[in-house]
Image (tube, rainbow over all chains, first blue to last red; front, side, top):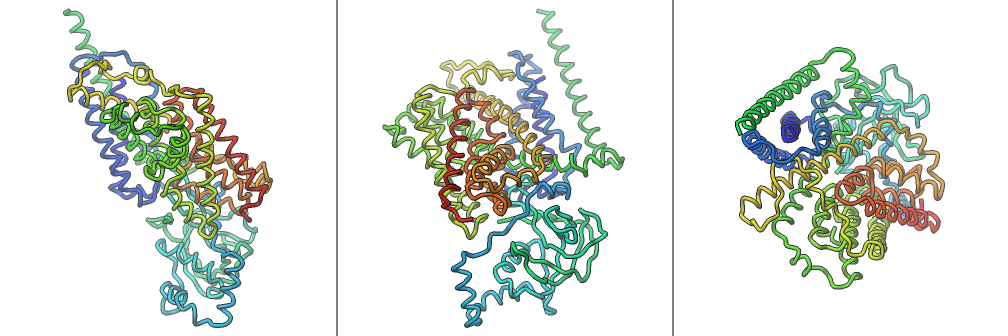
Amino acid sequence: MNTLIRLTALISLSYTLTILLKTGDITYYINPRFVPLTKFSLSFLLLLSFLTLVQFLLQLKNGPVTKNTARGVSILVLLACLTPFAFPPKMLGSSMAEQKGRLSIQRQATPQQSDLAQEIDDQQPQVIPDDMVQMKAFTNADGLITLTSNNYLELLFDMLDNQQRYLGKELEVTGFILHHKALKPDQYLVARYAIACCAADATIIGFVVEGTTSIPDNSWVKIRGTVTHFDQDSQPIVKVTSIEQIEQPTDPYIYQY
Amino acid sequence: MYESRASKKHKSFTRIIALFIVMNVILIIGAQAQLANSSVLRQLQLGVPGDLHVIFFSIIIEALPFIVIGVVGSTLLELFVSPDTIRRLLPKTWFLGIGVAGLLGLLFPFCECGLVPIVRRLMQKGVPAPLAAVFLLAAPVVNPVVGLATHFAFFTRPEFVYWRLGGAYLIAVIVGFLLINSQGGKNPSKTNYSANYCGCGFLHNYSRDNSLKTKLTNAFTHSQEEFFTIMHYLVIGAFLAATAQTFLPRVWLAAAGSHETGSVGVMMLVAFVLSLCSGADAFVANTFVSTFTPGSIVAFMVFGPMIDLKNTLMMLSSFNLGFVARLVFWVSILSFIVGVAINKLGVIGS
């Protein structure tokens, strides 16, 4: 019986992983970078399932040799392996967002360095064409900066490094609405989850929008707005010019490194 | 004779029926759950329980490959490395041995899930407990992967990387020396492990029978045993960690954030409960930087990979209670001291 429970657990876990890999829903749980590792564990599970099946058939033929002692262990694992059938993959909801911290991106250079940068900035602006080039790359013909899942973090970093360049610029960004407790009542976040390894380490990133909205938390929106200023934590504050509700994108998370 | 044959047949018949029923139940539940538009289940799936499950299952998926590596590695050790080989490779003095054991993570960048079965096997092969413990504690932190991740998370503040890796090495080595006195050469791994847990159909007779078939059969049964034992602790740990992440109000924590000693204790507790992978915890630590003292952030990143809920449960599956308790005790005290010292001395400016 123990063998049977184990066999069921192994098969259902292998099945779940196969489906997740096939549909790509695995990215709701882990960074796509780790997909090869999951494939590796899947192949081990399949091998173990096969051997356990052989073991089970042998036991059917010969009868069990030893008495079962640790059925609880197997049942617990089986239960865990069955849970995905009851809970289909989904994105973390905004109910979790209050629990998760907001990633404060540590890009403020040490004082001496920023002074130095400031000096260079003042005296010879032509020294830093690289940043201009980088910013150009994100900007389309109308000077609109579009943030996508792929350039999100890169752009956010660049923004914090070169705050002056982005002031007054128009940007387009998607995210879900979140009225975070740490914000003022007339502010809300157009937020995304950033994930390093798996959903357990998700953190909130996003743009603080000044104003109010009737759109409820957790609904996805695409906004256009201008960067009005940076707050004391050097997070950009955006004033919205247009906002529209959209479907949740297929890649709702942003993956770090 | 006739009787037993008949009862055996009867037994196998019930087994097949049972298999059939279990499979059916799974399929029905699965189909129901996927199609469910009915309000209650849907609410559950989309609401907080759904979030809890995402976190719970993501921890399991993320840890799975490392557990597999651990189980396979431990099986290979069992099959191909004799205690004699290990004895020859061991350094001759405690000092050298412990110093080197703490750096082995640079060569074997395992995370803590995979280490437990390997370290247990190493102990059974004759590696002294203090050496194995130093490896177990240091490797999840003092390794290139974690160094890189921490570097990314604290881009402009390399002090955090140095203090994290240095602090972890120091703590692991000190615990190693402390264990020489209390533990010495005693082997804390559970020797009655397979006998206790074995419900498989094979007799574990470690006779002189060294045929390939016996070896492979043993390898399989051990892999399976180890996999399930570790998995069931992972399941418990992941569930508790996911529950804590979902329901523990973060606001409560913020209150203790700026206290020089209190913040260190709180962050260690958070690290223990969250049970994050050592490759990822730096990014979570980053979210606390603005509200917590630097020492507490370092304590979080040093203590978490060595001791956390998930990994303590996994250690209990392999080592006896006294040994695990000793590890938890010393690592907690030392991490706390390191964290508080960083705050008091102000070595990392906030």
